[in-house]
Length: 206
Length: 390
Image 1 (tube, rainbow over the protein chains, first blue to last red):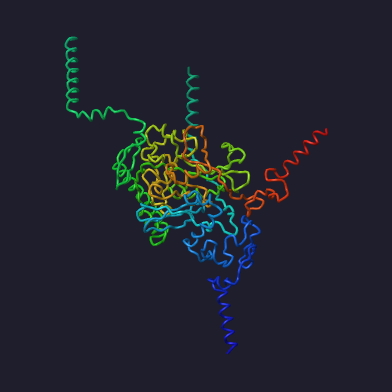
Image 2 (image 1 turned 180 degrees about the vertical axis):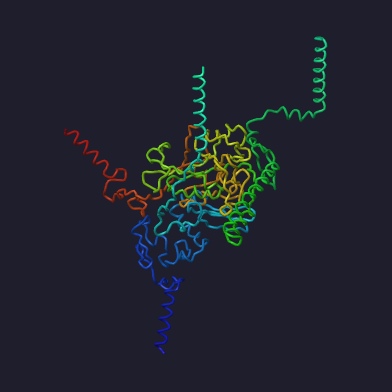
């Protein structure tokens, strides 16, 4: 009886550990607390001794009592499970240390804004010279609404915030060569020769 | 004979004078006063104001189309033309790939979706763009997204946005490298250059047929139905922002953008000039431009210059800005600035760190204060001492 119970418990633990939605509470109970000076979390592959946020500790952003929560009180959701609305909540944490950038972001001067239209859809197209483009399909192409930029953590990994440069696209194309003008050149040279011959003939006859 | 001729002339003059006087008496006095009123600079700038659905729109005084009805008619004509050219291309695609192919269906759908708008400029709006040169990595995504958005002919090598690759030490426009294949580098600066939408555009001043003019929201447009392809404007533009269609523009139904504006990205005619129009098919209806949308580093900002809470005013006040070729006197509305943070270049020593330049670390406690340059003063002193010794 006891062995069966243990086996089921083990199975449950294994399945929980390998499900994509691995609950953070499994480890982060209120009893597991962060010290003030933690910089590395090997299980999460986070190392704050390198990168642009090297000056910080885990407890600068995460609640030391419960690392699942941020110091602003928002629950941390893994990036592959979070919606854009969830990620938008974390912006105010970034704003605490980067007020100037946040002010830029709020007016649309940091990061790119986009737009949506009622009843329309947006497609990501790879087209001319393999370059990306957002194709907006709208019923009327009127009354479109600009949408603020993407959330901060969409582009900047909070544990390694410097964004490396993207790859570059091929160089610009030249104007194609003009049409073949053989006929024109031949005709012109023939006419010039004819004129020369005629003038020589006229001079000799005189 | 002479007397007779004189009499006839005198009678004629009398008649003209009489008709003139009676005309003046018949005409409304206020109307005559209005006619005699001189046109001021403000009038020219304000243009003709029309109220549509409770919002005030302006048609520029420079525009040859004075009323919304005229523009509407033009839009109708251009829409028919665009649809016809699109259907020709769609038929060709269907012939090549079969009637039931998805490409054929998509091409026909695109042709049906074509909408040529004639949205007017809103009153009190002045579009402007700002670009952070510290963040720009010179990837040319903006240039090619622009080609797709604005239905530019892919076979003529026309790209409205050119990315200049200049030395960071001196921004010398002549020493630019357009065909670079590797970027970004530490000592280089990348300047995407398109139409600067000047306040005093020299290109519109030289047009002999009034085919190009500045709209009331500051966008300089070209009407391809009026353009005769004389290329005066290409010569007049100090930024090289205008391009000529050397051969008939190919309309590809598959890659066509059906969102069009009469004076903007509607397929152009052969031997006409085209240029950047700040994506007026998007911006005038509440959207942003294609280049702003696609920028992978968010270097571009687009907005109303007159809006005190807009991005352009914020950038100018916070970081300051400069324009290209200010000595040309064109007053461009495309602002460049060097922002607070730079995208780490490829040849950075430590690209993941904010200290990618590899500067020596900050002095610790006990070391010389922050005002002393690391290693700088010591070496200077040593040199001085050695000089004294000699």
